[in-house]
Length: 300
Image (cartoon, rainbow, N blue to C red):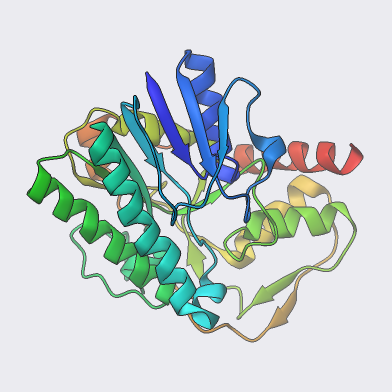
């Protein structure tokens, strides 16, 4: 298969590229390097440095995994026009380039930022109440994918990710709370929780997310949650990180931030039924693998 991965120098994208290369696929990475890193890109992938808001050419591709995004909630609160320009305008560019190539798009959306506050595991047909410009823009991009499916008869698929963590996650991004905790513990630095730590998230390991992306290829449209279906409080996450890192230090508490949901967990029954996918990596195992990668990076 010939595949394009936008954002393929980033956290999830580079892990996906590695899996595609191992399968023997021909992969082109399109990344502006605004947040991605050139060293993340597999040596056997073709690399094109380009912003998704520019002209794109996906000729020859069978599938486009669209992961390039402005992915920071707090940046979207401060610069909503920039967030929309990248996450909505850039997605339209990707859709048009994929249409010209006759390629399917598998789009990485967000669960937590789209559903807003959850009173339990949120299914795909839940009321959508984004609490940040990031969530609003991702929802708008989803509507474009659905619209292209109706207008042009395409079979693009939307995957709504829970809180993804694992090797190569950028601790500089708000969503990378696991990376932030583990990197600071590795350096012996204090950690911070915004709010009282009771807010919950659905933490899913990046290797499982890659499997979900691959499972979506060839499926004719649809919206699917990608998570574990289990919620973990940020305080519980911090405790789990402390165990794997062997740290004795507790977190410092700071005021909660605007745009952060208090409860977020996804119902994943649809993707298991339709695509045969479910998360297989436990939180403890995923944190152990991430800690091993973090300490190896620190020693390099």
